[in-house]
Length: 231
Image (tube, rainbow, N blue to C red):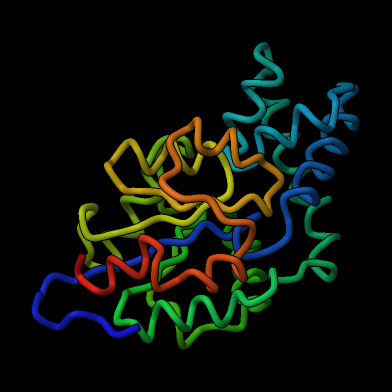
């Protein structure tokens, strides 16, 4: 798959990280569950999982509407502490490195549009081990508002020097799809984060694949392939 060099407009593909490139969604759900339990809050794991992909502040506000600011900070701190114990267990999904390399070799700028904490993102980048294929990345420090607000996508696009009309976003959560729609970026959704194809399509996903390997198998005919070819 070769890029069309007839246009000088830079094109790019953004990737969410947790649940999209790294198999971590359920670990985040478990970390939040334990954080809530530490504060005496008995919240079902399934309810938490459906909100993973939102920013932590929005997740807490949705599940505990009357949560005080002090408790919110305690919950976020506890989540971070518990999640860090899972770092040695985290693994990338199959064919992730090949997918990132394929996008890069097609002439697309590749960005990690992550809203993770900086220390978690550094761990994720080491796990991905694909630095030569990644041109820019973001963390929670780069966004004022978390997903489904599009701030993190805007920040990543700015770092890449790519306009929304020349980009595609790959994510795994309804909140990724909504964030992309907010600035007119088509979203390719993956179900490996645990959200069904029906829900992702209902939210507005343009394409849905099982996981990074499935997307790689269809890369040339996907929105990514069409973007690289200038179609």
